[in-house]
Length: 403
Image (cartoon, rainbow, N blue to C red; front, top):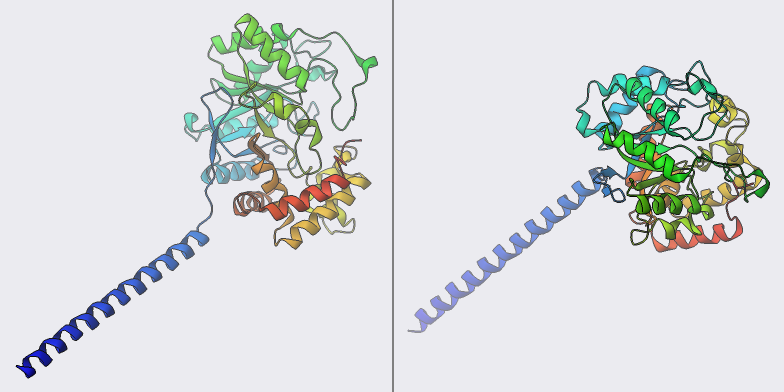
């Protein structure tokens, strides 16, 4: 009897040990799988997010590919390579304009569209969201066949759209912006409104009626504005509501660490989803490249090829002494937190609650890869400590690129 009890106890102990060992092995296997899963997640590139644009049915990637260098600083092959790479990375919206490439001149005007149009022929049209822009008030009469002045009226808008459709080799434009207002506004670094520059403009209702015709003809799906003010946004929205006309769904304005106040002070409220519901397509998020830090070294071997050096006077507000001082401070913030300057600048714009998409441009494939990788690899959202340091610099340098 005693021997039987001893044997039973032995068998129970053996069973418990085997069970314990099995459980331990299972736990170890689970832990190893979890670690491997985390490693794979860390190694896999972060995927882009997609957002509904304003009141439209467009779900756009959080990066928009800007194309204004195509045809001037980038060849057609380079442009096509960048378009294809962006498309493969999940970017589904690209932005062009009738006036591109930059700098605008008669002999190159429209070349960007032609490059884009030839690339579009090899892609499924419904997979690409095509945004372009019709010019506002301008003396660049080479944009039109016969015009003493370019305006945002019905004849000009119709001619612009028809020519854009032809160059882009498409039957319709997904998103058509008015590039800048038909009236005087304080633009491109101008700090305050100069009332002496007021001039008559095409009524908001008439601009919308011209755009309505294009929508009715199936040539444009949605409309937006660019380089616009709170007054302009609200007048467009009011005119649409009062007269049953199409409502703007987007605004394409400059926004970056160097230019914040013009949007944050009141446009952020106007464009809020519960107010006018207009999505921001943020342009110049790197301050025309200044926030990369490359303009801080005037002796850089390839500095002559940088856009602000290539086109003297173009966007020089971003390269002004105060803007350079602020840039140095932001570079220190990035370094302190283990980020690249590009990660800091693009991550900041990406995370703003009013940003629908960030427009990223490039002149080379290497530059494009760096920008996309920085955008997706920056911590999401940027940690509070990083934002606190950004605000500390901002309090010392409020919009240093505004003259």
